[in-house]
Picture 1: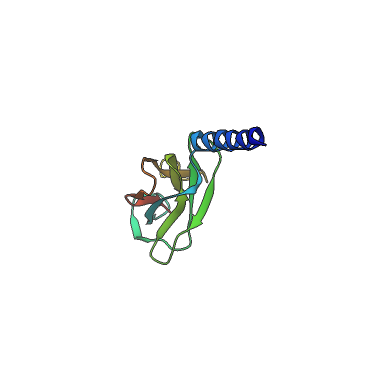
Picture 2: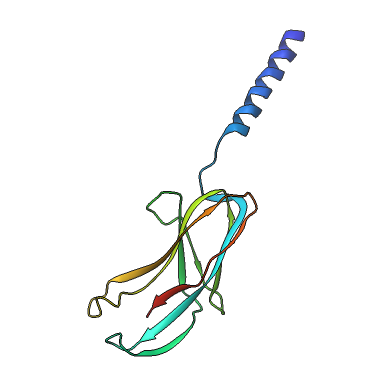
Length: 135
């Protein structure tokens, strides 16, 4: 009977050590966050005259986890252009929004405004400078 209890204890200890030693990749499941605001500059058709500029509501902001190429999540900006990605783990992230490319004014090719950031602390609150896109 003693051996059976001892084996169960050793098994549980090994499982706990294994779980504690697992390094989780960047992504959801943590306590950190990335916040910012999306700022839009509107130009006329040839991109030479600025017609308006404002913090944009209802626009999509994207995040890529780690060194991946696929979108990990998206959020819509609030009434004041703000956005937040919550519950992130330590790691590298790419946050971006899409706008028009002023170097190709007659093509409908989107251009991204991108920030590459790294969360280094478990409960870090990363605040980005404004993401600026052209519309």
